[in-house]
Amino acid sequence: MEREKTRLYRRPWTRALAGVLVLLLFLSLLSGLWIRVRISADTEDAAQGYLAGETEYVNASELERLIEQLRNLRQPTKLEDYYSRAGTRIANEDYAQALTYIEKCLELYTPDYGEPLHVDLLIKQGCLLTLLDRSEEAIAPLNAALELDPSQSAVYLVLAQIYSGTGQTSELMDALSAYLELEPEESELRLMLAQLRYAMEEYPAAADQTAYLLESGAQQGPELAALCLNLGIQLTQAQEYDRALVQLDGAIALQAFLQTEEPSEPEDGEEADDAQALEEQLASLHYYRGLCNLTLKHYEEAVEDYDKAIEQGVLPQLSHYGRGVAECMSEEPDYQQAVEDLVFAVNYQGEDADTAIAAQALELLEILTTEN
Image 1 (cartoon, helix red, strand yellow):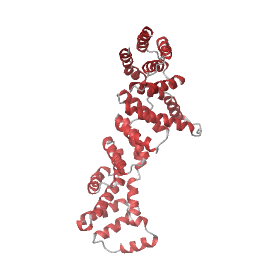
Image 2 (tube, rainbow, N blue to C red):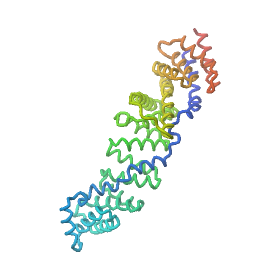
Image 3 (cartoon, helix red, strand yellow):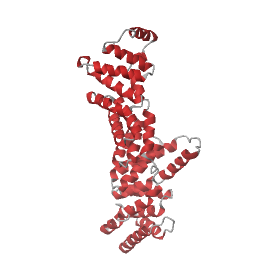
Image 4 (spheres, helix red, strand yellow):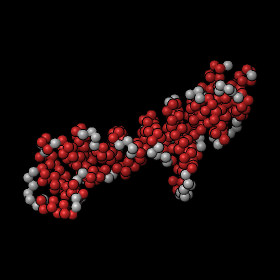
């Protein structure tokens, strides 16, 4: 009996899952291009930010600036002179002349000045080239700076900005990953990296990022909920059930949190459509978690999930069939409930009725009625 039941319930899941995936993929239209544009928008000030933060003249008082300007009246001869002039030009947003001065500094640089200055000059060169729309030329000095000092997190953001513009998706993801190694609490960029990896169909890597966000609690919005939902589905289809459970648990927890928030004002257009689509998809969470729990032999948990899926009217035939199977396999099976669910699955006539599921339900039903 036990062997027969196990044989039966394992057979239809892949086919059933493939059949309903089209109903739930909120992120199926998500493209690498859209994510790259968004990352570019969020990191477009990376080069300017580094220059502003690491240039003394930009942050100097009026008196300090006046003294510096007087010093700059003399003919430059040393690295210090050119470096000072570069700072003045950066503050005035004269990036072309600032680049000329920084490159002169690099010509005059010797190891006696120390490696930190060399790193700073290389980063400034890369940032200035980026601001002058010479991004591809900027990559070499920025990478050279990282070879000398891999802890320069700002450089990875500048590189991400460059790669998002050039469409180098693999390099973009590498740059964001390296940045997050150094700045792990940057949750917005971590969410974007997860979305990008999802768009590139790198589901386990995307799940690593969302798992971090779920554990830290740094993100609690509908974007993460949708991403976790769809990762749960994809990982279930890939038979990575433990990882899928983490994602589905997270999506359900986020759904509960979002429902406790004060309702927002009605939205118009595409945003309203997206919100409605997400709400409909979140209603299917318990079906997929039930499927995952059933496959992992968490039968009692599977019954609870299918209870909620049935209450919500989600995939009625599949949900009743799943609950019937889970009841059969439980330590304390409710055979009456199992029979009722299997009968429902056999007789279901909805538009989404699946004859293969009905046949499996009938076969298991015959075993149950014969044995009991």
